[in-house]
Amino acid sequence: MESDEQKAKNELELSAWNSWKDVCWVHGLGKRLEQGKPIIGNAEEEAVLEKKIAFAFSAKLRTFGNCFDKEELEIGGEGMRVDFAQEFDAALREYEQPESDGKVLVRDRRFSEIKARKPKCWKNVVWSAIAESEDPPLKVIRGKLLGKQGVINEIVEDWILRNFSARIRKEKNDLGKDVDVLRFDSGEDAIEEKSEETEREQMNLVQAMPDKISGKLAEALSPVMCCVLYAHAYNVMLYKEAEILEKLEIGKSTASTMLGKAADIVASMEDDIRFWIFEHPSQFNNWLKNRITLEKAGLLILSRIEEREKLERGNAI
Image 1 (cartoon, rainbow, N blue to C red):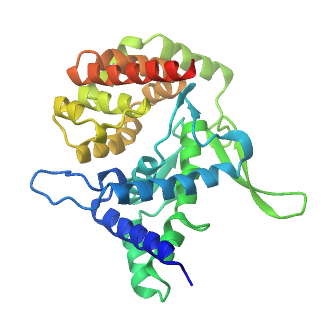
Image 2 (cartoon, rainbow, N blue to C red):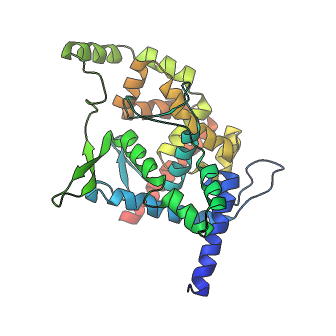
Image 3 (spheres, one colour):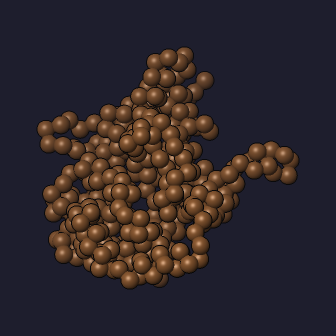
């Protein structure tokens, strides 16, 4: 029999998940996302789901030993703190959006297709399962989203693939049991083999056309999108930055939606542009930085990053 304290915690978590179903964004709980629309949820519910998702996400990462640290992860050669709740929500939005052929494609950093799924709205799946199950609603929600067989496993695996060009494979351990093993590779098994001459030509082409790259990126990525991307890369939480959002002239939900669309925009670019972005992450970040310095919101974002870095240096002394 659960204690009164545990019962209260479970009731709060269930309320948080029900609020999340309506808002579709953990960090949108307790915030006014659109003028005239009611506020759904509260900060306490946001904190509960943040903690639950971060625990499930990092627990999956820890199955791969010391490859990942749950607090600080290396992406693109630079340390960044990962907002697990944001990654969770962004992945679920992507899983709902089919490609032109009606499937959801998951790509690695070089955009080679490695998985094709039927689009699925997990919120509908979960709450339909609640209606059909005799189990308590919270048990169904946890199982479908964060459990051992939950969608969190797909989210983490796809996240690792995109950010680290690594794959999770089923292999036999010394006891003959199937276990998940992380294999870092360059995607040779997913990318059509090219001759050395072809690869050299491609590299020369990329290095010889910075003006074209810059021009194409400027056409595809608006100044506002650049600000959203740079803020996300350096962990400036826009949902907490009313002043920056005001300068961008967008709301919290729009910022979240734009972040989700960024991958689709990049995926639609020409192959050589995409290749350059993912082979030169530092240069791409520099391009974004130069782009946002022309915007008042961009200067505020850079200011926030500088303030945080000064604080971190001070704490380290």
